[in-house]
Image (cartoon, rainbow, N blue to C red; front, top):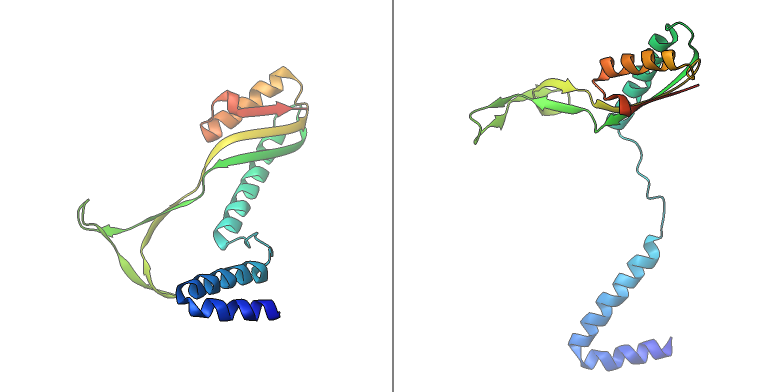
Length: 158
């Protein structure tokens, strides 16, 4: 401790070095006191709504697939491409367009015109009967028609 005090006394004579040292010490202290903590952020309402939307869609698709003859015990996983998008009303031309602002629950808000749900990038289906090639074709065709997918974006197994 005495060495640090004597170092400060010597550096006080050279004011520029004192500033650099103090900034360095503060930086080290902040780094050490900051800790590593939990860096994972809590899910926001948007991500929770998105997860709920995808889970609901998976259940609905699984229910449809279970109606195909020879299929039972269906598990579906859908992979969204991006997230949901909000489209807001705008005034003016292309270059100088401004959002239309309304009185909302939490103060002023932009006027929401529509919400665009995410597109589905791929699908996986595991079901009893999924090893039968004729059942696989029916399931692949159903998913391609529902989500405008290419057949190589759909996996079916039993």
